[in-house]
Image (cartoon, rainbow, N blue to C red; front, side):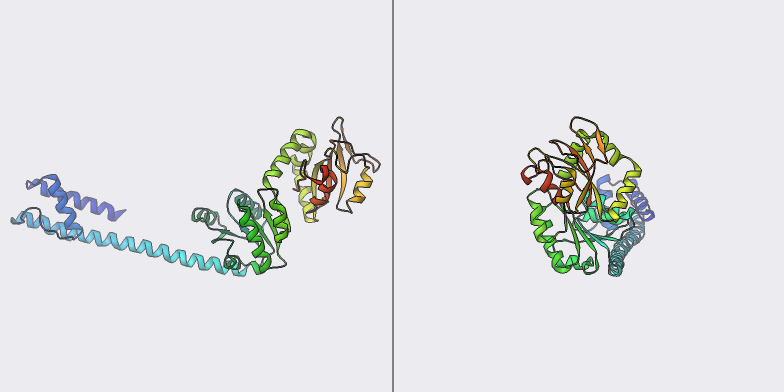
Length: 343
């Protein structure tokens, strides 16, 4: 700032001096600029009088000195930024190399941002892979370990420490990219837990075949949650609303369990069967803790002899990642009339 202010004062003073000796404004400005920048195209008017020579010499000495100062400051700024960037990347690489049992997040979009916030709140170590420079800058400003790299490249996954990671979450909005990342990650680390995002329902089976342990369909989960709130307001408020239940859900997750709300769709295998029969058919993957009758009050701790009717909403506690077992029993014809959400 000092250098810029200094140059403005020198150039302004020189222009005023040339104006005083009778030069036009355009000639004065042109003369000052070619002098300060040492271009040397020649004088606009002959420099013959002692006064003109004094003005020109003063402009050369003060102006060139100021330009050298500004140029040096600019070079120093650029060099320091480059050095800091290089050392910052090296420091980040060393930090990543020391990580063990960490999480790799592929993509720093809307879901990636929320996922990173949740992992930080939970005290988990994680690395983000994101190709967009703007998103990378935002992640680093937030204090996250973030590599500007394409997660579909195996070298990028290795740079993120995939050999030592415990979980990889690929949450890119491109289904094809998520499938490719899943294939690459599974090949690099056979013991890695892979959680993949899918946009289309048809992508779920592809991701499972590619090696994903779990598949999350955000659009479906959002629709299920809205339907749950519309159909069973009291249950939704009880299960999802209180801090106590949120803490309880965390405890269940630590035990490999989760709370689910499903609907017995018309013509599903569950219609007309008792709770005891359904739990047996589920082969221990869940048990039913509450029934919400379509026309009636919720039944908490229902007995095993309770018969499931068309449109009943059921609150289940089941093993994490076993939503497929729920779908086989509660969806019409084995297809998703109202998909099970595992949250």
